[in-house]
Length: 324
Image (cartoon, rainbow, N blue to C red):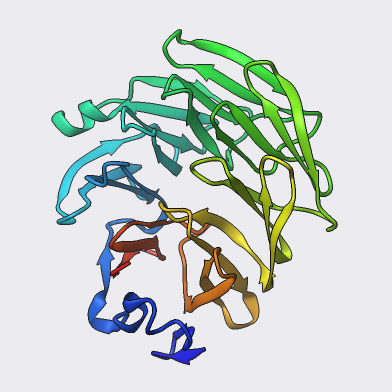
């Protein structure tokens, strides 16, 4: 690894292949301050026009920015509880917020664009104060989130609870793609379910004590799962292990880039009070970079786009300008 700065190490063998690694200098990294005591959640619309940022604030504000210019467009206010999760639906019809009062709030993005302090359209009650994951699917018609031993699926068009999927344990991590539910079960089993038929159609076993998180590629060809000191890549059709990567510590908040070529994750090192961002090339199993910083909690929030990598810190957003 080649040291660019005190905090940044890059793969010396890949510096020439990836121009953005060469150009990832101080002048291409900026810190954008947010008027929050702590940044806890962030998402960017899929057309890349808007960025929503939330966290701890006196009046429970979610800030809406123009993602390109970082100009403040709107401020929307949630309930009397802090917001910990923000998510735009796949075609930017909705923005949802997970709140500590066991609530999910739903806005229409058109309202956010046109109305200052737009009010949410719907409140969905949850069983937990914190929902680890909320997903839209079925062309934005349905919303899925965790319960005690099941997944709730809400039909947004029918304004009703569409389905409860029983899984006999609290789901730690799941992903949905093309009406398939990929879920980390007990121990080291990944279940693949057909949501429409509510049937397990396949399962994948992994020789580790416990899998933590899972994410599925955009075209459903492969999935990535993390455990302590390991990252696994599986073929979703036959369950074959494609790749196993050794890492230091536990990979958290694993996310795929828009083109599914890179995996970002964070590992935390309490002894030095630093968090380490990693970017892994999944095609070659090479670690591109390792970056030490102090991230926002409780989760590592980030978005890798064609020309930017954005992530939340304590009370700011850090922006890397990339050439991918």
